Length: 550
Image (tube, rainbow, N blue to C red):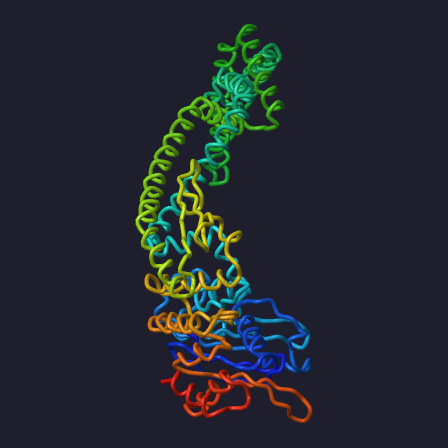
């Protein structure tokens, strides 16, 4: 509920600070006194776009602040979704700066207008004759029926299911598109994969292969050089090994003369042993050296294939080719298994579709169950409001497609007089009739759900005294479970209020100001008497006012 409203430097208001209670609050005032200004300020708090022309003194900041008690509104989840700290005593503030820019705050946290609108729609509903047009809109009509049908949890489940269903459909479309693309690439990928598989990349050591090629390709030069090296080492009398042995004999003769000579002898012995090993290795290599043109051709062919693959795939390592081969195989596997993946996805969609149909059927059954109750209550209230011949029909028809709130189409049909036919509300109900219908619907809704605070802005325009008395009774009844405001010109409604505020203008230093005052008991009698008989208050008007208030 709205607990207080503070307005500063807005339109004709210098500064206004007022507190409100629960129940039915009446706001009255002469035409042009500034009731629309009050509503305009409140609308800014609820998210209406700011206009610098609304600021009273352009050099100063305009501030509008509304405090709400939201303990009964179950809004913790909404606050979390808006990334706001939840507080049962919530304060919304709008500021219009001298520059024309505006700022919005919820519990002192800066917010966007979108966040402000998202929250304020749960806090207060300003209802005027203009807003009765929402009665003709499908969304509102569904909202009314679903509130009576207690479909909130079903609709939440349906919404989640519909979201999953649409994602699955989108995924299936992507898979089918992917299949078309993959099929185009499949043959080429398979060719590349077979080409890489044929060479058995995992068993290729490129360095060994290149060394083998170099050896077979240069076998004659290798044999010639090995033979020359062997001759240098092992020529009789002149070979390096014989020369080393001679040097060893000479050094042995002086080895006993000191450690330096002993060390030289040991070192040359070591050199001799190493050269003997080298000679043996040369012999072995010569024995094993042979020409093999076929092996040379095989190795050369394999190297050519590897180099061609390097060039084709723009890589330089065997490991890179192995990675490419795995990627290609993955694409091939994906293509070959795509039919099964598509089939699985289609099965998921069928299951999701079946589940959605079950929820939609439950939603529809709940709606059908409450429609006769709703129509009966609505027609009874409208009869009290001076429309005894008004008839309502709510048509609920199944559809082939899922919509955001189930699988139904809904239409409110209205017949105002006997002998006429049912037609859409927007075609068959006048503005005054729509106002009374809206009041009746709000009254019925208040029996089933916790409505936000509601402000009826001259909804009683053009209504007779007896009917206005009934309207006042309905507002009074509604206010037993929620906060109701009524801006009215009718004394019969004004007298029903638990509290009464008057909007009026005063001139101070040739400047007009709008003010709001809470009336005490005596002031209420005077105000209602004036509403009955005009500025000249008669004894009969005072007596009538007291009677109404009592």
